[in-house]
Amino acid sequence: MPFPVESQLSGLERHEDHMFYRKLVDVPKNWKVGKSGTANRLKLNFGAVDYQATVYVNGRKVAEHTGGYNAFTADITDALKSKGKQEIVVAVTDTGGADQPTGKQSTHPGGIFYTQSSGIWQTVWMEPVAHAAIDNVVTTPDIDTGTLAVTVESENASRHARVEAVARDARGKVVGRVSGPAGSKLDLRVAGQRLWSPDDPYLYDLDIKLKDGRSTDEVGSYFGMREIGIKEVGGFQKLVLNGKPVFSSPPSTRASGPTASTPRPATTPWRSTSKRTRSSASTPSASTSRWSHRAGSTTRTDSACWSGRTSSPGTSPTRPGRRPSSTRAGR
Image (tube, rainbow, N blue to C red; front, side, top):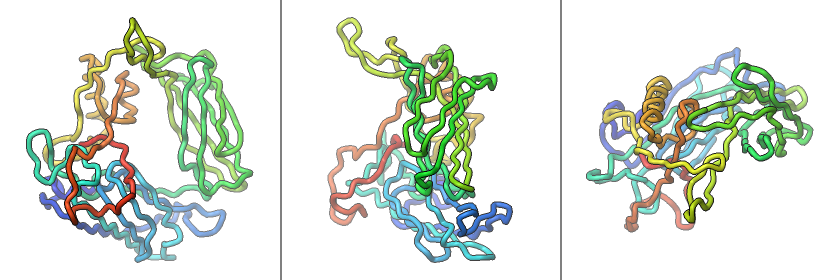
């Protein structure tokens, strides 16, 4: 993971409006990547790049993305050479303009505002996937009916593609199974559901398989049976978990330290932090962390904001009327 250019560990420790990253990579032969319908496809994944990114492979543009807080993926199969090193170039622009959401990043850090985190600031990785791959899995628990709604999304799957989802408890016992068309909402009934709560952070494993002709893809995930909402309690609107009021008092968690300016890259320190935070009756603000879920910590994530700044001519690369994608809290 390249560190933000402003951070000490990047080796630059200064801000740049425009950045270029270049790397030569090999594609392992045992990944069986190719352009035929039976070969695997190759995906290049970015955890986050701040702010505007354009990705080239062997001189061919394969992806553009605007927004510094969420992940994006490029299928680079068709841009690969038949042999030899593959060249990846990422062009990034981050001016810190007034009309882009920066959270607490600032071109003039001080007080409650912090140094910018420009460029590639989360992990980048390649992976071979099936021709009809699982792109996303959306799960929604319903504790009233004891079911989990599962939707498996796949851009390349045909209308004949089928999905099977299997739920297992902590001992590995199958407690639910459902199958149906890809892209459809499937209701998986969880036998003898055990609700997730901070005092009993019980999680289920979820195995998902997508089969489309000769193409098969499988992923593993997890879920908890819980329901979070707002309801009137004692004449006041309160946050409720599984129908019962809960009090959330989250400390603010951002970077891993003054030298990196990035989220914690390792699971072990964050697992320990989650446990300490849970024991002190607090809530970490890291999003979608499995260690938080396992430790029984409820999480709350803010969206990046514009911090009330006004726009100046030439300060932002964002085109008028274009809404950037931003889903992660300011860091």
